[in-house]
Image (tube, rainbow, N blue to C red; front, side, top):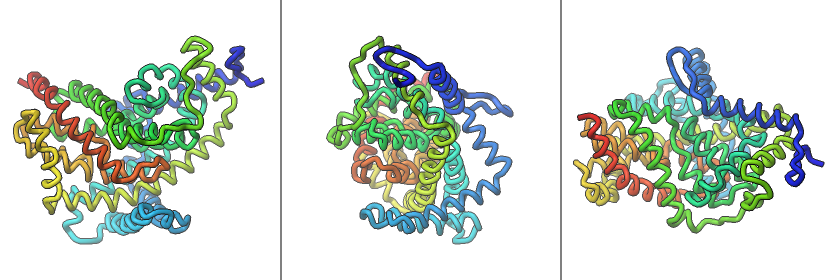
Length: 439
């Protein structure tokens, strides 16, 4: 008999201990802000900040080594020839190696070393993402390997399924993204999808609808836009609007038409009360789970492979986007696609909102830089758009492409357009209302 049996409800004390103790460690590391040295954030962020501050040079050396390994891996493994997309991405990874080496050794044309170019990509994105993915992967063993995912899934099913058409356990992915990193959220999503617990449609919805930047990065956006005086309004409005937009996009093409079959679908009818069923399913996983050391090693391996895939892409695709935004009218042209929505919302300077929103496709921080000196309502809407749009070429799109989630660039561009347009319409009335707090 299993240590836990869903019919008899027999529970092993060891399984119960694993479920509670390991899950508590995972929750603490990813979700509980603590104050250290005057900075209040989650323990995972403290660990990454400590490594960056105390071992900054070593962290940069580590990051460049990961980039080099990531550039070589597709050619060593043969992945570069599996599809046209992988071939193009592999070429970009080689370019990413070149630009990373340039950034590390400060060698190259002067215009590439302006603070919003290579230094920004390498120091503000590559180094922290390179640290947070494998370190976060270590603690993922506690969060998703011993029953918490299944426990939360059963409890949250009544909310997640009707609103977002995803299993209850996807709430873990959503929270992990907001308090940790989109890369951590995608790491969880990819792991669960590969195990057959998410369908392609569910994994795509989670990747494009929940895997946004962390609350920590939201603070940086708010500071850049001068919105810290209304931080609580900005944070909760962004959180709500992001998920309302997701609830709408899951009902639109292309997400609505994706394959929705999964090998291990969540059970919807239970033999016991919802809480008891949640506990029993969590305990069953805890009882049959691999030893902690084996889980951690497996997660580190997956985390390193994801970091190797993401970092070179950030350096190459991200730089292309930044150059296009700064030196060409490309994003001005794309901005015309959003002008009607900004005009309908009666926003001041609708072209500014449209153009700034379009630049978010290259890098989610660009809209904040462009709108920083605008009026309050414009800054508020652009700030929400930069976070709610989720998809951008400097990091999240390459990150999704590095997973096994079956989303292509065309599908992601359509979803990105839908998200930006809907966010402009939803964030505008909130911005006009929030303006009262600064008068």
